[in-house]
Amino acid sequence: MNWRYFYIASVVALSYILFLSWNAEKEIKQEVAEATAIDLSRNQQVLPAGETEDLIEIQNSKLILKISPVTGKIWEARLKEHTYLNNDESLGVRLFGFDNATGFKFYLNSGFTSEDQNFEIVNVRPSSIELVSADGKINKNIALKDNDYELIIKDVWVGDLPVDLPTPYIAMYRTDGRALDARDNFFENSSYTGVAFNTPEEPYANNRLRSIDERIEYFQRGGWVAFIQKYFMAAILTPSDRVQALTALPPTSGSDTYVMGAISREVKASDLMSGVDHRVFLGPKIRSDLIGRASDLELTIDMGWFWFLAQPLMMLLSIINVFVGNWGVSIILLTVLVKLLLWPISAKGFSSMAKMRTAQPKLKEIQERYKDDRTKLGTEMMALYKKEGINPAGGCFPLFLQMPVFIAFFFCLRESVELRHESFFFWIQDLSAPDPFFILPVVFAALMYLTQQLNPQPPGMDPTQAQIMKFMPVMIAVIFVIMPAGLVLYSVANSAISLIQQRAMYKKYGASIYSGSGGG
Image (cartoon, rainbow, N blue to C red):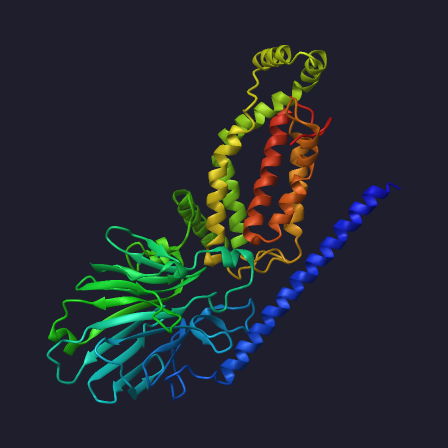
């Protein structure tokens, strides 16, 4: 028995068991956190400062809002169709909310900047609430649109107008920190979280909260201000019929709360008396949906450096899924389509590697003959390349051309809420989360190893470098352990198709398969 291989196998098996235990422990922590949230929801959390009555709940088929009948603030917004955990019993993800344990808070308020008001309830319906201020000057109506992620807040001044007209505003208030109900994994936390503006000069201007150390302000008609997190966002969509200041403010002295909102300018008395409407979007970042809501709103989906490739890839993926009905299968079919489109480029690379492999015996002979004369070695090798029609960089250049597609696909799959909690088959029940049993990373490592055996070892490669390349499949597999299963599934499909294509090209050019030593 070769004890070296036994030792390696034991280390791999132990590592796999430890990874499984770590993953199971993480799942248990999420379930405990969810159970705590459910318990707090059923047994009302301690209300934030200034609130003396229980929050009033209104809802439609998409959203549940909890509103203070005292201050008119929206203290909680929960999405019905996007749950925290991947099960039917889980509560929906919160966009607005507060956590007494950590002091985190994220809420929305609107009204007039002249003074704060205490309210009383006028009327409550399933999807709307009407409030009136204690002094009778202000009426507030908060209503959810039917079967939609939008709400309309209407603030009306019903009392006598003061000499200095009050200024209507709407704003979101948030402390810094991780979003409520965000999953605890690397890719969840690495996505952009912060405030973004849409302006005529900059369709998408963004800042992380901690970078806001002074007032940010844009005066304009239309546009939007949003707080963005992975998969979801809260956005104030401003109208184009009046000038507004879109603004973000750092915490004031003694406060830890950032303010992001819109303040109306050039408001007439008739506007105040008839009412000022505020439009708010609270929901998932689905490109096809955002495009129709406001100009450039789809830019809140971070598609990375190669967005011009990622956006059409996501459109194609969505179209395929309409017919297939399974996002995992759609990823595989889109991978096949992309590989077919890139086949002319891939074929050149594979043919170059095939020719290189058939020339390996001659290359080794030249290396052995001129091992003490590097100048002559280089001359003879170039002569052989010219004679055999080999481009030494031919196998690498097509790979570089395909890298933008891979990076675009990476961002496409990483940021797509459509894949969240979507299953593939068998053990893959969430394409946006890592493979729970690490099977896909292992399959990818195996495919990468087989590909290495096909690839000819570059002439003159350092032996140490050659040994390191042999461990590349394991290193990549370890990285893929923390990546979303959808992305790893794409990589597995891409590698499998490439392997089939490469074998076909080798057969065409008569290159031996898996003979001799493979290279990196």
